[in-house]
Amino acid sequence: MKAIVRTSAGTAGGRLQLQELAEPRPAAKEIVIRLAAASINPIDALIREGYGDSLFKWLRAKGPMVMGLDGAGVVSAVGSEVRDFKPGDRVMAATMPFASGFYAEAVAVKAAWACKIPAGLGMAEAAALPYAGLTAAQVLSAAGLDAPSTAGKKVLVHGGSGGIGSLLVQHLHRAGAWVASTCGGSNLEFVRGLGADQVIDYRKQDFTRLLSGMDVVINTVAPDPRARSLNEAPHLSVLKAGGTYASLISPTLTLSDVLGAPLGVAASGAWMGLAKLRWALAGKMHHWVYFRPSGARLAELARWAVEGSYRPVIGRRYPLADAAAALATVERGPARGKVLLCIDQQLLETT
Ligand SMILES: NC(=O)c1ccc[n+]([C@@H]2O[C@H](COP(=O)([O-])OP(=O)(O)OC[C@H]3O[C@@H](n4cnc5c(N)ncnc54)[C@H](OP(=O)(O)O)[C@@H]3O)[C@@H](O)[C@H]2O)c1
Image: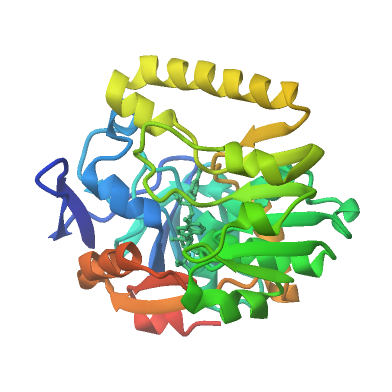
C-alpha cells in the first residue's frame, strides 16, 4: 500500500515521502480500514517538524512513521477478538500520535477507537470528524457544557473558525448558550453563521475590553505551541467568579522535548498543578484537555452530526501524494474547517 512517511524531522525541516509499505495486518483487537479519506490536523505540521518526538518515540513501536491521526473508510480485515465489526462496514476512527497513521491507503487501528458511520453522514464528513470532534467533545465535558444546564451560559470560544472551534460554536449555539468567539477578520461572517452571538477579530479587537462575566472560556488557540510560556491571565480576566477555563494548550509536549519524556511529563504535571492552584485561589477553575480516542464517544458525536448540531466543515481537498501541500495550506491559514486527503474516490462515494 502507499503511505506518507515522515523520513526526517528537526531544524532542517520535516520531510515527507510517499512510500510503498506492506499491507497492515490486524492484531487480535484491531481492524484494518481501507481508507477513503484522512483529515489534516494542524498538529500534524508540528509533528512533522519533530514536536512531541520525545514522548511519542518513547511510546511508539519501531517501523516507518506514517503521518495522520484520523479518517474514514471501509473495514477490510478484523482481528481474532473483534466482534463489533466485519469486512465491508463503513467506519471512522482516530488514533494516538504514536500509533500507525491515516495518511495511507490502509491502517490497522484498535477496534475500540473506531465506530460505524451512521446513515446520513457522508464519508468525507466522517473522515473530518474524529480527532477534532472527540477533542471538542472532551472540552465540552471538562467545562461542564455537555449537560442541559448549558442553556443560557455565556461562553467564549477562541478560534471559532478552526476545526475544533467550529464544532464548539455550532454545538453550544444549539444547546442554547450565548456564544462569543474570536477568529480572523476574513472568517467573521462564517463564525456568525455557525451561531456565534458575538464575533471578535483577534487581530483588530481586544476581547478583554469587549467581554466580561463569562461562565466559561475555551482556548483552542496556540499561535506557537512551542512557546515557553502560556499567557493565560487575559482569559482569567473575562471570567466571572466561579467561572471555568478549559484549554487545549498545555506545556506537556514542549517540556518533554526540552527535558526528555519522563522528566518532561513530571515537570508539566507539577507546572499545571501549580497553575490550577493559582486559578483556584482566584476563585476560578482551570482544566487542561487532552485528546483521547474512543469509538463509543465517536458514535455519539456521529449521531449529533446527523442531527445537525456537530457538522464538520470541510475545506480544501488534496490527493494522498500531495500531503505536503495539504499541510502547507493548514500552516498558512486562515483556517476554515478541515482540509482532507482524498485517498480512494470510489470509497468516498459509498453511502
Ligand atoms: N490538547 C489536545 O489534546 C489537543 C488536541 C487537538 C488539538 N489541539 C490544539 O488545538 C488547537 C486548535 O486545533 P484546530 O484543529 O481547531 O486548529 P485550526 O483549525 O488551525 O484552528 C485554529 C483557529 O485559531 C484561530 N486563531 C489563530 N490565532 C488566533 C488568536 N491569536 N486569537 C484567536 N484565534 C486565533 C484561527 O483563526 P483564523 O484562521 O480565522 O485566523 C483558527 O480559527 C491547535 O493548537 C492544536 O494543536 C490540542
